[in-house]
Length: 138
Image (tube, rainbow, N blue to C red; front, side, top):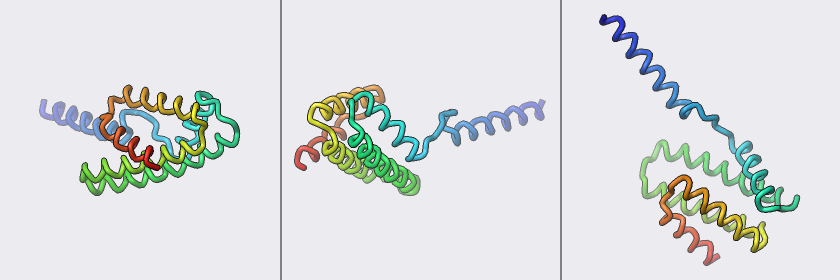
């Protein structure tokens, strides 16, 4: 009986570790893949031309690389306030760059897409409003 309980515990522990490392079986994309996928979505949804698409992919790639670096830093430094401030600044910079690429009409649609995305994820909109204020200043 003790052997069975021990074996069960080992199996459960192994499964837990495997799922934690694999984030529940979801595939993790590298920054290049993420930028390519997101750009293709925006190209369709925002009806971007080829020049806009190329610029958008460059902005997103730089942004996702920075995000990847920030995630690594956050694993080492768990200061939530600092982390939130950095993410807010990062998002504001990304939004400024995207605003330069899109027409006014496309940007309005982009903002609606982002709002829908945030509501689906249930993000705290207080942080989002703070970086919108930063954008409006720039």
